[in-house]
Amino acid sequence: MLVNCVAYTEGRKLADIPVEDISEYVKRPNCFVWVALKDPEPSELEMMQEEFSLHELAVDDARHGHQRPKIEEYGDSLFAVLQTLELKDDDFVLGEVHIFVGPNYILSTRRRTEKGFADVRARCEREPDLLQNGSGYVLYALMDAVVDRYFPVLDALESELETVEERIFMKNTARSNIEALYALKQKLMTLKHTVDPLMEAVGKLSGGRVPHICTGMREYFRDVLDHLQRLHASIEGIRDMQTTAIQVNLGMINLNETEVTKKLAGWAAIIAIPTLIAGIYGMNFKGIPEYDWTYGYPMALAAMVGIDVVLYGWFRRIGWL
Image 1 (cartoon, rainbow, N blue to C red):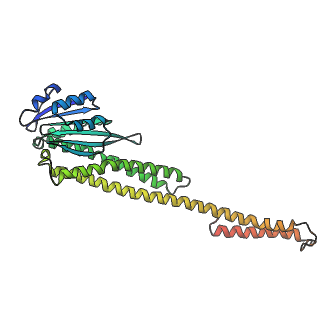
Image 2 (image 1 turned 30 degrees about the vertical axis):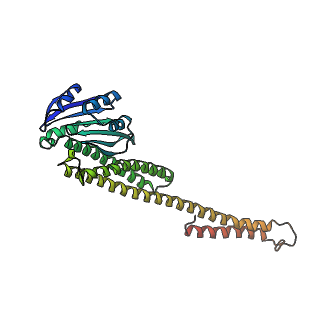
Image 3 (image 1 turned 90 degrees about the vertical axis):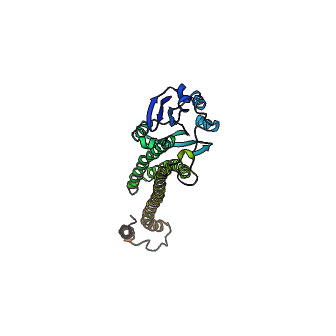
């Protein structure tokens, strides 16, 4: 679906143009065309390929999707793949943004992504001095917007970890805590796989041999790289805390099992004393010591009760019961 098709010249909006006129505007000096598509059909991509002379391999990647974040160079054009993360019902919706960049055009397509880039277009149009840099500045603005949208996702994961940590020392929550921590680990890995490859790709635009399209924008891409590095450091920090939380939770499970074992051992010792005495007096032969003693039975009962009371008091004092 076509979202926008706009021509710009000398940092200012020239006009909204029909798709059929794109090839005419891209031939004008100091003019570039910015086209935005949402969930494009193969026929729309073919039309864009004809209008902008896009590389077949880049178009094929955009057609099939499911690409890892990357930036590839095809002659004097670039093809960038970025992944988007949107929270929906406490789960991630993973989308993709494909950006084709040439000296006089920029084509952005998004799949499985509800939030568009109208705010990015508005930002660019409010900054005509920067927009004079052409498609290179628009590429930066789109990448900056995608990266900035990772921070609310990271904040949500930090809040989720804090919630689980508050429940670790509560009774009968061990299983639910482990499930929540492993679900959090899966989300962290998804965010990590989104950020780390992009960090490597953006690093090529901020240092070394910078593509001609991005000339003069090196410091801006360095800013995007700084944001990605902050995200990477925060992700690693949360992963360390999550690992520690899992270890503490497992330690609490072992501690609870030890408490149960001690209680079972204490009650077993208490039951063993009367069992022992009753077992001895249950032997039916005449020569048993004190067999004919008048006070033997009450003394046996008193010994059972007395020893059990002493054991119970001792186990309570040492924390076994």
